[in-house]
Amino acid sequence: MIEQDDEPGSIRGEKLQKVLAQAGFGSRRAMEEWIAAGRVSVNGEPATLGMRVQAGDLVKTERRTIRVGERDHVARVLLYHKPEGEIVSRDDPEKRASVFDKLPKLRGQKWIAIGRLDYNTSGLLIFTTSGELANRLMHPRFEVEREYAVRVQGTMTDEQINQVLKEGVELEDGRATFDKLEDQGGEGFNHWYRVMLKEGRNRIVRRTFDALGLPVSRLMRVRFGIINLPPRLKRGMTAELGEGEMAQVLEWAGLDAAEPAIEVKPTEAPRPLRAVRGAGVSRRVRR
Image 1 (cartoon, one colour):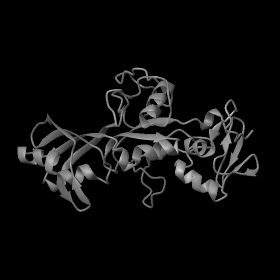
Image 2: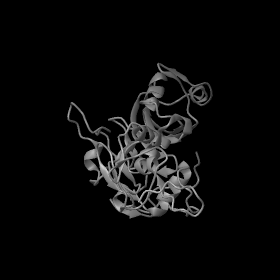
Image 3: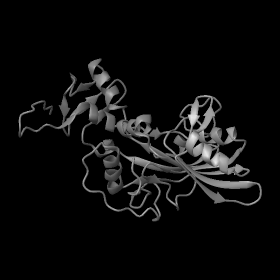
Image 4: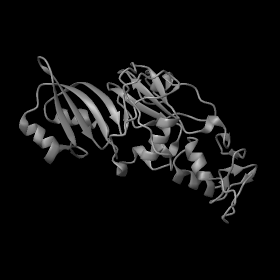
């Protein structure tokens, strides 16, 4: 049943573009463009902007068809501990191993990678079925924090530390600065640092250290926004956020008027491919 009545007490349902975005078709704005272009139908009739849908409605696009309210179309978030030697792409002419090969199969949806990690970088990679959530977390204006553990060949001087924190380092695509940098020590020629920044330009951490004459020998992302890499999530393993963590992530992203978030212990071990508590969501970090 389609309901467009805005009178008080009417059964309003959800906006069509929101349902499509949450099902992983794309951002809400892109879905509005699809609807305006006549690329979407509801229960066999052409969709219109402003239309609302309810559980049971059949929504069809050029690519896929979904039944509103089915469990398979609820927004989901999956954490993956990416090892080195995998690409974040479904199509690679060189036929290299892809992170998408390791993800659970979906029916009527697809996993969308929130940001990327390059071939030689490991650590936290987040996937969602919600196009709107992916768009919100990747858009530069939201300045989502990314935190990395970095091992470099050499040791930073005090002048270099001040430079990356205050003045920035000039790269070919603009100046790069770190919002936070901590010395984690090291042995011999290798030294560890933990850095935090609020942008996701391609290979920005590696390029910044390279510009300082400190080649990166290992790079690992340990946090993205409020989501931490779970300590016991081994390389090549996945863990899905449970309902409590999902509500917390959506509330943080400003996409859902969720109930007050519960405290999640990020040190608890996740179970692969299941909705689990303690899968790495932290309340201490804000946008």
